[in-house]
Length: 279
Image (tube, rainbow, N blue to C red; front, side, top):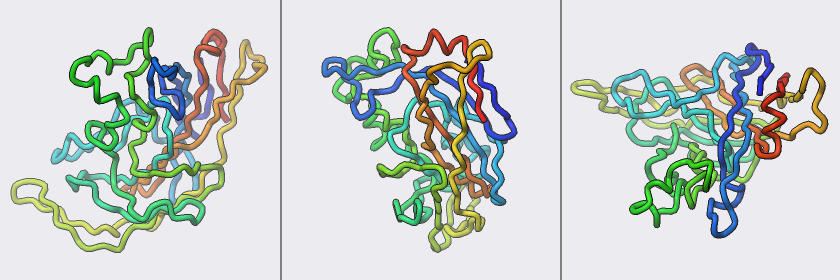
């Protein structure tokens, strides 16, 4: 499917992937197999002056840190995932200057405090608690092939839950909707000395961030699918929503990711030939 959009306004990507049936981990025997979905990913960059553009691309791979001290750390996770159970709000900065998660401050949505313990960075995919959503640990030792993506059988490993894609530290059933405010308030904390190598120490404070720390969720992009230049009827419902907000303290900007999905089996034959206009 071709995506027609203004790259000056947002970045876009379409993929076909697999997710667990929302609300149920993958379990063929229990009647909850994985499902193939067509996924639309749109990304907006919101500047400190309130302007919105598409300067930051949709990431198809994780982006690491340029600093050589902690090359294994992820600065920005790939945007290509089929589904997130809850929204992610993640705070990042330019340098990987801490080796363990450090508290940043408070997150409030529409004036309601969601957490007072918002941390820097992403949860590690290879350790608990995030890893617990990736597979059924009872089969880990003896059926490694069960962990592989296999579109001809289970699509996803037994026990896989969509929460595995959530790399933030937020546990909330709230949704981020058009016009909602997202306010991230840093703690006024002590000074930290972090050893970054032989004879080198990096000093920073938890409150040493730019003053721009409140986002208003932009209006949802409008979608229209056409086939041979004619609007498709009925239109596929992607159920587009914001599921990722990244606060980049170094650039003093927010990255807003919209994601929507449709049942690929029902729409594949049509959408492979169609165009999706995003405005």
